[in-house]
Length: 213
Image 1 (cartoon, rainbow, N blue to C red):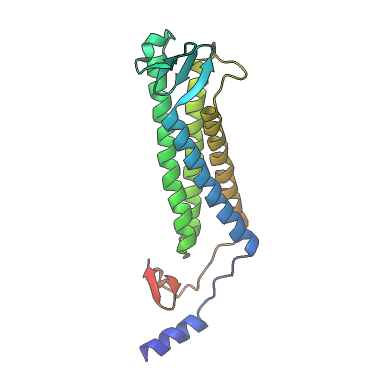
Image 2 (image 1 turned 90 degrees about the vertical axis):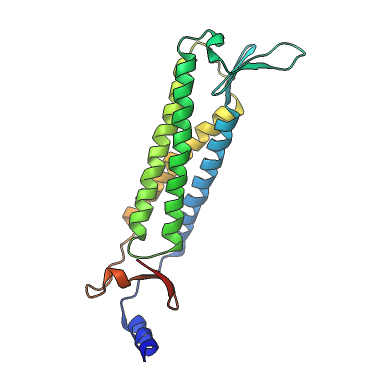
């Protein structure tokens, strides 16, 4: 009798509006691009070599000198690069850039959870995830800006390495996905269940095998 009552309540209860293919595609694309941005930023920070200036290679973690027909000689002591404030500035730049990746991972997780488990809180999770990606953009851009300001006298048009452009692309993707996520959330209509339905009984899943919130 209980099973029959549950089936009847499911059939007669409020129906959540079906999501359009275009909306689902855009949300999936945002998640994929955000994942790509996290990977690009992680690889760029781990490598850390962002600027080649004549016979010197500047990075977040090392300072290298390059001689002809020999391997680069890299030092962790950035003071020996004889650039004012480089050691302290690089420490700040890599800390900010690394924090951006951490924040972006949490944001990406919220975006994915909001789509896997669709309930009345899904829009809120999606919005929070998008805001976290926006914070990741601010942190990532801050790291890039600190790096450029510190080495402004050594910068040349073709001096930036591929790893620098990976971080630049990741920062741009963080902003693009955050703005797109917030925009599509504002365009779609929220799901308003009937007032008589308790928040503790709203379920996420199908056929009764679900998580309760």
